[in-house]
Length: 135
Image (cartoon, rainbow, N blue to C red; front, side):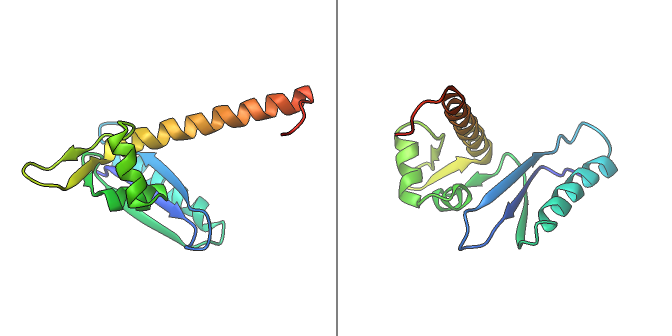
């Protein structure tokens, strides 16, 4: 049984969406360990007393710009601008005006964005510790 890629989305339409992505390597561990990892993630989200949505997908899946936008919390137009700027990998379908975004590329984009946010937070904390005035 290949578990592929696991997503859990926490939140509702009025709140900022929080995503938790768990990579499940089909070659590592047994099925029970993989299921236990997923179960723990779902239980953690349920303990927060919020509604969750769970999606299981293969990392080789292709998403439409709208699906990518929904996942990122962006507009479809912003996703198109990211594609045009080369910040998000996408493929134009042959003889078509339609684009597809590899899920794997979307995950890389999310990870790099998260790392940049963490660096910015760390810089802000460092400035606070030094007593720098807020602007």
